[in-house]
Amino acid sequence: MKRAIVFPGQGSQVVGMGKDLAEAIPECKALFERANEILGYDLEKICFEGPQDELNKSNHAQLGIFVASAAAFQALEIKQPGLEYDLLAGHSLGEWTALHVSGVVGFEDTIRILKARGEAMQAACEANPGAMLAVMGVDGDALVKIAAEAGCYVANFNSLAQTVLSGTAESIGQAEALVKEAGAKRAIRLPVAGAFHSPLMQPAADTMAAFLDGIEFAPEKVPVLSNVTATPHGAASVKDDMVRQITSSVQWVSLIQWMVSHGVEEIVECGPGKVLAGLIKRIDKTCSVRNIGRLTDLEKE
Image (cartoon, rainbow, N blue to C red; front, side):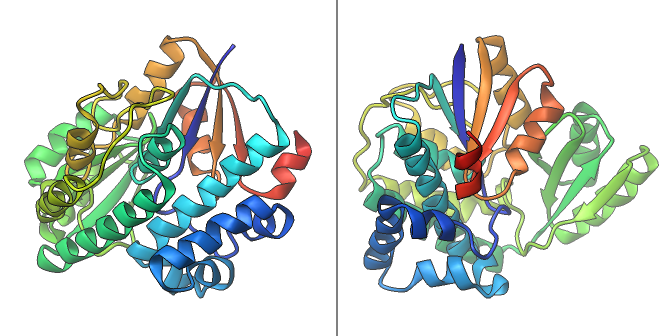
């Protein structure tokens, strides 16, 4: 049986994430302590105690989700030694967690990358304010046409039932009216200040392209699927793909379909929340899905 491990992206953050793992498993506690040392502030306290508004800030959310996800994966390996897996992937920032687990970038470098990424994306939000709209019940292909008509972009193909649009506040307002006309079951404005995964993030992509030039990438130990192409990264394409990811659509539906078509029968989500597990079940009901985010999840195994 082929198994894949996936890691969540921004939006999965919740106060208390990783706390029970850190209290029970010294190796997990060490990850949070190491992150504090690298960053020079107490990320661990923000993750464990909040407040939620502070944790929701892009820089804290991205870093916190990465460390909590890495801790969940560490706990899984300790509790299930010898666990085999064939593919890795992550949703948006979770792709960096997958690259870390595959040995492409070390823990310290991933912290540095995500710190720079969060800061660059926040700066892009301030320079080019935008909005995002989650749409349920409209086909993804139809939403591509609606986005083009409204002047916005498809940010996330999350599931067969949920797609997220991204763009200026004006274009998202136009799209909101159009999706209602198209029969959307729900259309929800996301509580974000920027148009993530759209061309409005180009300044952040430019910043990250320069930053990543100073990072040495190692070969993957396990194939990692790209959000941009929904296929495994090529050896020479990882940096370019990760820069493109900032302005490109997250092809999560195609990525999961690629996994299943290549024999994956079980997908394990490592990290806070169960967002990806829920999306995967809506994409392919034949695939077994489980989540490892808390100590109780490991105790069930």
